[in-house]
Every structure is written in structure tokens, then in C-alpha cells.
Length: 142
Length: 176
Image 1: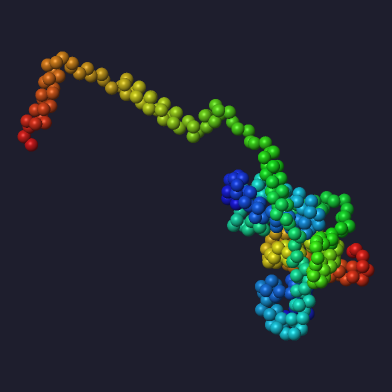
Image 2 (image 1 turned 30 degrees about the vertical axis):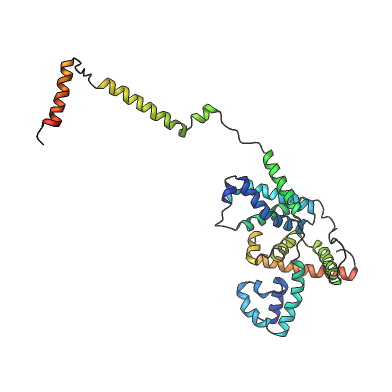
């Protein structure tokens, strides 16, 4: 890097070599270490400091602007909310209803498809069934 | 930002509290009118809210995205102007007693603000991002949607023009 290139870079990027483009920094540091290089950087640094001064933004101004944004958002009409019957017809809302309908259909089908067996209800048959059960439970050899 | 994308107003309020000052600062540096800068800051955050879903943190930082929105709004407005108002900036508020150093600094700032008025909006934008906001050359170029080389050229011309304006003001004692 020539001193002229160094001066041009300083005029573009300012007095802080570390903020210059990365490929130029190493060579620039060597020139910056000389008296001439340091003088060039000093001159630019003074301008840098002035350029870095920002307009003062008071907190009240920030709050007011933020409030106005929220107010504008609130003024935007909400998206049209679908009617109840439209919401109920959506797929997620239909899952429980479909499950219930399927259960009812299976129940009705089973009731119709299976043969009806009438169990004996006379006392003798009932007693005989009970004792048979006990005979199997307690009397059997296990 | 993910919460803002999900349209959560609390997250948006936090985001505004944190970033509104930088939007106002940059806009004011370019348009040199606090009221107009406020309008731009508000419009910028309206866009942040409505376009939050399109923000991709893999592509850019939020601040870079915000700067880009602010700059686009600012340049759009200044492009629509029929004339560039002659600068009325440079009146640094004078409150209370000052040390001599402060007076000198104020005078320098006044001079600088006059000189800044003679720059183009894009030149003021480049100076605002690189010097005032402290962005790197690459970040500032990205926010301005420019190549690194184009940004370097813009910044160099801005500083050169600024120095020329300062000299002109000092010689004539008048506006640029």
C-alpha cells in the first residue's frame, strides 16, 4: 500500500484502521505506525467524531411514536370471523362428531347382524347354572 | 421476531421500545425534520408488523432489515418532494450555561449540519449508517442494498463533498 492509497482509504473510511475493509488493514497498520500515517488518521478522526454525533431522540418521542403505531394497528379492521356454522364445518371440529357417528353405526350393525339368544329365565335353570359354576370353581380337582 | 410474526402485540411493543430510537435517528439524519422522521419511524414499524412473516433471520439481522425499511421509506419520500428545502438545520439547542469547549463543539456541529444539508439523501444515509450507527461497511452496504464497492464509493464521495461544503461555508460564511 502506497501512502497515497493510505490517504485515500482514510478519506473514505475515516481515522480508525480497524473499520477499514479487512484486506487493507494489515498494510494500513504498518503505515499508521509512522508519523505521517498517524497524522492522516488524526485528521480524519476529528471528522469521524463529529459525524458520529446522533440527533437526540427523547424517550417521550419514542413512546409517542410507538403509541401511534399501536393506534394505527388497532384501527385496521379485524379479519372477517366466520359464522358459527362455518366454524363447525371445519375439519378439526368434525372429528368428534364423525367418531360418534361411526360408533353408532357399528352398534346398530352389530345389533342387527348377531343372532338373538334368549337365555333361560326359569328358576331351575338359573339355579342349575349357578351350582354348575360353583361346581367348576370349587369342586374341580386342580 | 418469531413472536411478532405470530402477531403478538406485547412482543411488538418490546421490539418498538428497543428499536424505534434507531429508526427515528437515521430518518432524522437524512430528512433533517423531526416530524417527518417520526412519520417514517411509525410507517417503518407498521411494515415490520405487516411483513414480519417475510423476515428471515438466516438472511439478515433484524436491525439490517429495519434500516433497509427506514431507508427505502426515506428515499421514497425525498424522491417525491418537488424541491429540496434549503437547510434550516444546524440550530443546536442552546440550553443553559456552557463551557467553552461545548460552545466550540456546538459551533462545529452547526457547521457540520449545514454542510450535511448539501449532500444527497443517499450520501447522508451512508454517513448515518457507517458513522452514526457504527455499522461495518459490509452491513451498511447490505442495509442500503448496495455492493461493498458501491458503498465504499458512496461513502468516499459523501465525505469528500462534506469537506468541500464545510470549506465553502467557512469561506463565504453562508449556506451551501
